[in-house]
Every structure is written in C-alpha cells, then in structure tokens.
Length: 226
Length: 83
Image (cartoon, rainbow over all chains, first blue to last red; front, side, top):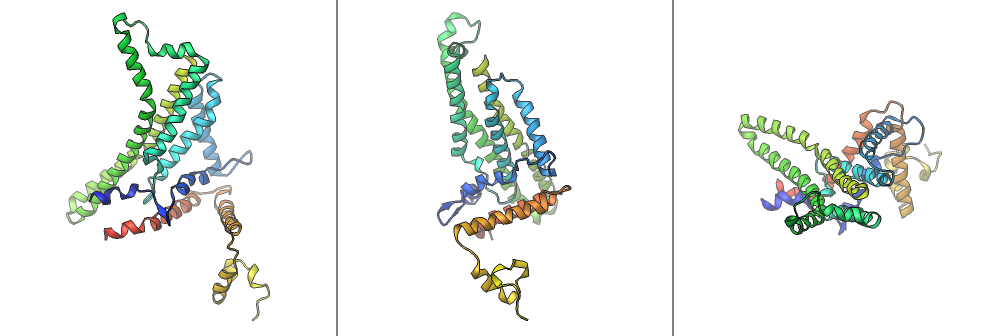
C-alpha cells in the first residue's frame, strides 16, 4: 500500500529520458505573448491578470527594487500554472519535488542578501539587531537573527513542497476511500462531497504561490530599502 | 479513378483509406520534419480555436484533455497493478 500511494510522485520516465523536462516546459505553451492592441479572449484575460498581479506586487518597491519585476512575475506565473496544471487527473506536478523548489529558492534568496550586503552594507547588517533591545540580550539575539536569516531559503522551498505534496496525497487518499466505500452507500456521498470541497480549497494552491512570491518580496524589500 | 494530385502532397483528410499506409511512409520523419509538423499543428489549433474573436473555453479544454491523455499513457504501467 505504501508503494501505491507515492507512485504518483515518481518522475515520469520514458525509455530512460526523464519526461519531467517536457512537463515543466508545458505551461509555456499556454502563455501567449500579445500581438495586437486587442487580442483574442485568452490573451486578453492573461494580459489583465498580469497587469493585476504586477500592480499588486510592485507598487510598494523603490525603482531599484522594481528592476526585479520581470523575475518575480515570471516566478509567480510559473509556480501558479504548475500547481494548477497538477490538479488535472494523472498529472505530474514538478513543484512537488524538493529539488526544484530548492533550486528556485536558494538563488533568489542569495541574490537578495548579496544585493543588500553590497549596496547597503550598514543597514542590511543592522537588521540583525532590532531596536531597543536590552544590552545583556544582544549576543543571543544576534545568533537568533542569523539563524532566522539562514533558514529563509529552506523555509521557502519546504513550505511549497510540503503544501503541494500534502494536498495531492490527501486527495489520493480520499479518492481511494470513496471508491472502496461505494458498497456502503450513504458514506460515499458525504466522502465525495468532502473531496470536492477539498479540491476547491486545494485551488488555494494558487494562494500558496502568492505566499511564495510575497515572502520573497519581503526579503527583497527589507534588504533593498530598509 | 486516378488521383490528379500526387500522393505525397495531399493533406491527411484528403487521403483515401487504402492509401493511408503509403502516405504515412512517405512523410518526412527527419528531426526538422517532426518539428515542422508540431509547429503546423500548434498554429492550426491556435488560429482555429483560440485566436478568434469569440473563442470559448473549448479551445483550452482540448489542450487540457490532451494533456490528461498524455499523462495517462505514461503512467499506464504503474496503474496496471491497481486492477
């Protein structure tokens, strides 16, 4: 039973070639760059969504921080599309693999830290000590702040992985339960209703993308501007 | 009745059923041929179903359905045990 449950998270392989590369590139086929002033419906909806998220994310930054807008926008689009496409049946979600999330989290976090250290050395180092701490507490607090800084990329990656994986796993489990409970008629209908509700709340996996990008933004913002 | 257009240049819907194996064998299977076939298929779907004034959700649903079938065929081996 253990092996059956986790096989949906295996990387699909055909003839030894990992198919995950194709699946990661699939969301790019759904995003169409707008060609005319007024486009078809799909492009217009995408344009509107892009404008909405861009305004939401980038207005609180200085012009220097706004040079990151392309990076952050493509990040949120990538993660959102991958998570949503993973909700279709039999799909493989690349964001369930910790390797990919670490590959996204560590470079971006390191970039914000290095940028802060390079351009605003004093103020980024000053973040390690909140204002108005009593003097005996200072050594311990610096250690704690350093740990909380270093744990940021790990937290970003593990948060995304764990949330998506847990949601998918729960859906698999509930689906199996509903299937085996078909013989007992009454419970199966309530179980299926719970599955549907869970699927809808799992589409708050999109909210998780927001959480990802926003925590990334918070790090960028704090290191960039004070 | 003899075909007026040579077999190689016919599109798929115009090929008669008896001629189908020879038509398939005559297609261009080089890498650039396969890439060209994918590009033509993509643009045909895009221009017919999505790039119209009042495109509906059916254009996108076809893509998603193909994605589901694609993933099902590649996970068939593991799913076989669940019978």
